[in-house]
Length: 146
Figure 1 (tube, rainbow, N blue to C red):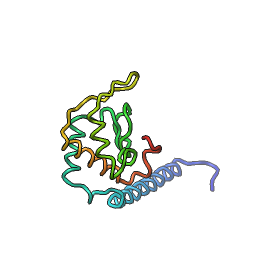
Figure 2: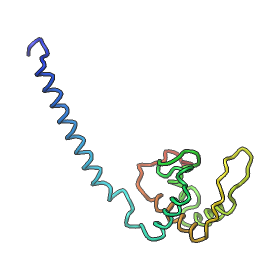
Figure 3: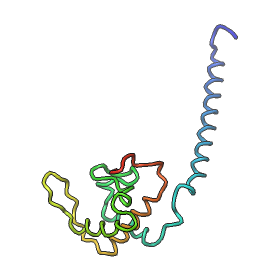
Figure 4: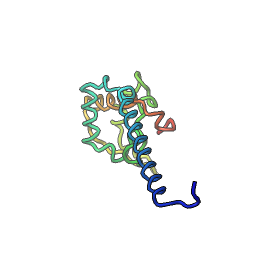
C-alpha cells in the first residue's frame, strides 16, 4: 500500500461506506416492518377502542398526558395505567370514579379538568387504555408509575 492517501481512495471509502450503511438501514427497516404484526395487538381492536381513541383526541388528553412515550409530560404516562390501577377487575371502576371527582382541588397539585364524560365515553376510554397497555413496547415506560 502506498504511503499517501489519494483522492480516489477517499472517494472509494466514502462511496463504499455509504452503500454499506444504506444497505444496513434497508435491512433494519425491513426487519422492523416485519415485526409490527407480532408486537401490536391489532386483532383485539374493536369499536369501543376506536371510540375511546376518539374521546382521547377530542378532549386533547395528549396535551397533558403521554401515551407510550408520545405527548406532553405535564401529567402521568398512561401507557401502563391499566395495570397500575386495577387491571381487568378494577380499572373501569377506578377510571369512572377518578373522572367523576376531577378536579381534586388538592393544594400544590396540578388540576385535571372535569370533562363531563358520559359513562359510555369513560368505558370506551377504558377500553382504549386497556388496548394500548397490551402493545409490546419493549418495557416502556421504564418505571411502574410512568
